[in-house]
Length: 112
Image 1 (cartoon, helix red, strand yellow):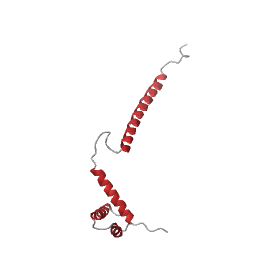
Image 2 (cartoon, one colour):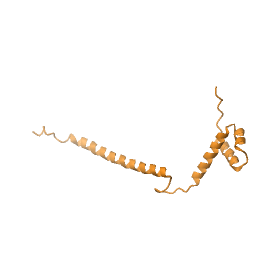
Image 3 (tube, one colour):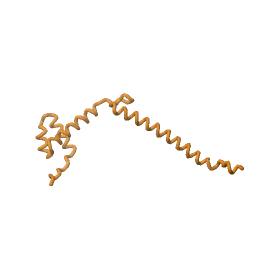
């Protein structure tokens, strides 16, 4: 049987733990022991905290030059998909309108 799962550590406590580790007030091992989680979990919290802070401090420029290469590629692809969807929607409406009007046009056999 596996070990019983500990209660999740509240975000406020995680923040205090990570800040204490970053400030050098306690080691990751000590923080893990005090909070009842593994050292790897504390390291994961620290890494996510630092990455989130780094992302928050980046200047967000608007326009096509902002973001990573992957983000720009995805934005361009999204724009292409929006245009394709708009074109398909217009074509569908034209075909639907044509189908509505097709019943109003007499057939070749009915003209005779």
